[in-house]
Amino acid sequence: MRLTGLTVLYTALAIGANASFVSAQDFSPLADLKTGDMKKLVLHTDAKPVAQTVFFDQSGVELTLSDFQGKTTVLNLWATWCAPCRAEMPSLSELQTKLGGDDFQVVTIAAMRNSAAAIDAFFSEINVDNLPKHQDPKGALTRNLSVAGLPATLLIDDSGQEVGRLLGDAHWSSPDALALIGKFIELDKSNE
Image (tube, rainbow, N blue to C red; front, side, top):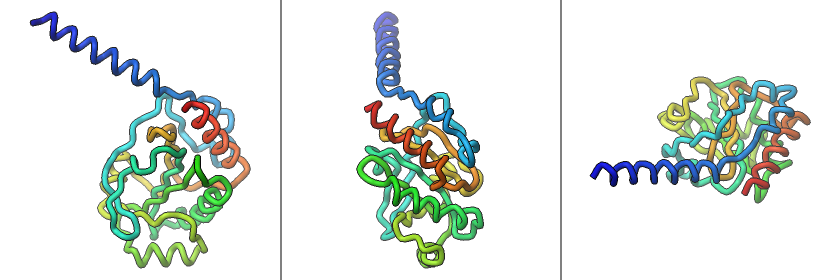
């Protein structure tokens, strides 16, 4: 009986080790591109799973972050009342315009209490029309991602693992950011 238990344990450990080895990706070359605002980006030693907590699209449909797998993603958590978010959002829009497509996307989620009307007004005032207006009305996803302040931006690989995060605002369409995100997409695509 004990031998059977140990065999099951070692088999499970071997499968887990092999699964993490197969999905391990090397994003260390991004460290060399951390210049300008990208110096604030914290790259993880190992990719981390992201919370699969429900949030909502603009029409109220439930989503989780697994709905965005398959593309390299810049995930931005923000709020209508957040001044740094207002300053940052147009550069996220420009990042989506420049790099968005089959391999890359910018996903924005309004954290906490942000009414649909307030989100629409926010996007209208800053002339942004190419980013999603997702909502995390009770902050459950935000909490489960261990985000304590806004804005917060996570780099997520195409398998849905968090590779790094930047707390505070950044100029996401600057040459520094475009070089780093371009390399992130390239590395993610080559690791498939």
